[in-house]
Length: 262
Image (cartoon, rainbow, N blue to C red; front, side, top):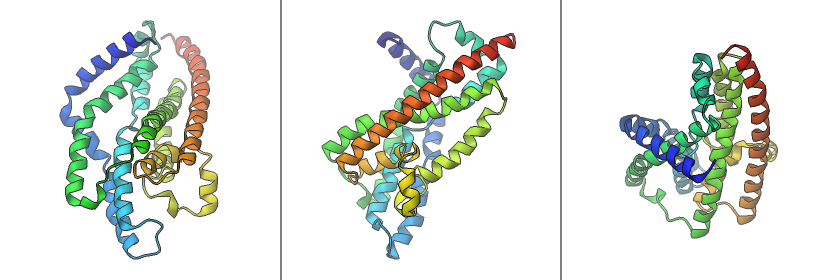
């Protein structure tokens, strides 16, 4: 994949995404669950005995909302549809891996969605003025590394599950199970501080905390540099592992797909 092809695909999919501005707004609003949960956890924090203060929770859930805008992935539904309908055959005739079409369509959607994210964040700031803050320059630099890695891992996790569409017509059902685990263990529903210590100790070796919790805590300035470095290492490890599994399933799946006469 060279820069010229990447730029062409991104530009084409960006123009396509601009045709559905209203849908992009709905997509941005559909990821406002953290802003809704903020009210619940803020009341808990005001009662005392909570790891984070009410103000810290407001910043945390705003950071989760922003982080999740970059982690939304839907490739499994598109890939499943292409396999079942036979549209994947047209992709295979092109000189690039079909995965790049899905990847750059996601990148283009992020770019087209950005103005709506800024508007929603500004409105949230009007309702909760203390929740707005100016991130430290080091945290911003860390996010420039962590956020793309978190998206790449989230994309690979779902795209690897999508490979099961070669064997079953309901691969997306597996994503629904993964999504429940993702919401529970990534820090989306609640900060990981509310999880018991023994579970949290084991959780740091899984990919889930690094998809949302790590970027959110970096954004609010609550993640030490050494923890950021470890988080990046874990993200790279899981990304490499899912890539190897993905390539294995892709090769096996293509043989089955061609064997079915596609």
